[in-house]
Image (cartoon, rainbow, N blue to C red; front, side, top):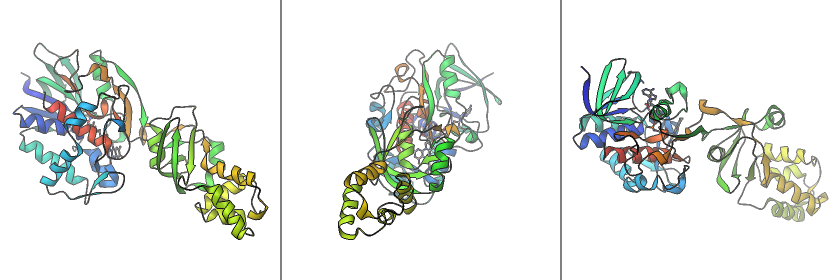
Length: 394
Ligand code: FDA
């Protein structure tokens, strides 16, 4: 005899646990199944161990999706303030770091503990280290076959996340389930991920590994203003992670280093007041020194005095830094990507409830849906909001 539940949720991550709490509060009998040893592993490691659990500015414009309107309903019904109120009820101290990003003062583990406590209080059961071997539809709902037996439920919520960081248990199960039920899936790709450079570029830029600079990273009309970091493999830092979600293979990105200042104007001013200094010395006062030396060398100006440079040469040197065009060779892939772009096609889902339009009782929430947030707490906000939406309906 199969075990009976009202709701089975696959995945005890951010979205699955939020959904379990909400469904449990409504008096539904809820079972959450996960193959991992512990719930909320990505929460635990997120934000450098402090979890950037939301962003106070979160709105539909901060998400990528083939249907940018899809996220509106869920985001409007569960706002960043709602999550802040929840953690404050649990006495979890938090602070805003930058750009509306909210972090725990102490540890991301506080958030995991809070969610587990809330699930218990709502009567939801958590079953860990349980592998799933099959998911089928029955006359009255769904049957989930696991290594520990069979469970039947009227509602099945798929909250198993994306493909990023397979070492942490990401499997892409949600996409397989969607396909088994003939639901469309938007092509997936690694996002919020460092970009790599080819060996020739790396040889040229090798000496810059470890250098960080304030920059605007642009791809087409999309630009992000944050730090860029040069690494032994290529480009990283928040501005690069952000732009990686938009970048496509074969295309170029443009970096504007020190976007707040007009480097050419500053160099011209220095030429007037102290023209007898070497160009790399002058530039070293504006940019990190290794970067300054790199661009001066690239322009073949090493050892030249500022006084010897024409306006045209200064403009060219400035443009090499403020319109620095690079063609990434690829990305570091799912191994290091923070999220998966694409996923279960939102056209197949009801935006108010996350229920599949063609399969009553089947829900997809969190990262496995084709809604991907920017860096900065937006992805957790989507997980909470979509989990909350489904939790009111299952
Ligand atoms: P999530 O991946 O959290 O949970 C899915 C669950 O399903 C997991 O517990 C997994 O074990 C389980 N599962 C998978 N396959 C299964 C299977 N076959 N059988 C059974 N169970 C299965 N976002 C943000 O907003 N702020 C931040 O600070 C960060 N920081 C961050 C750091 C790092 C290193 C990463 C990798 C990611 C982030 N993110 C982030 C992104 C954020 O972690 C992500 O968007 C959410 O965890 C997605 O929540 P979900 O619940 O959808 O999936």
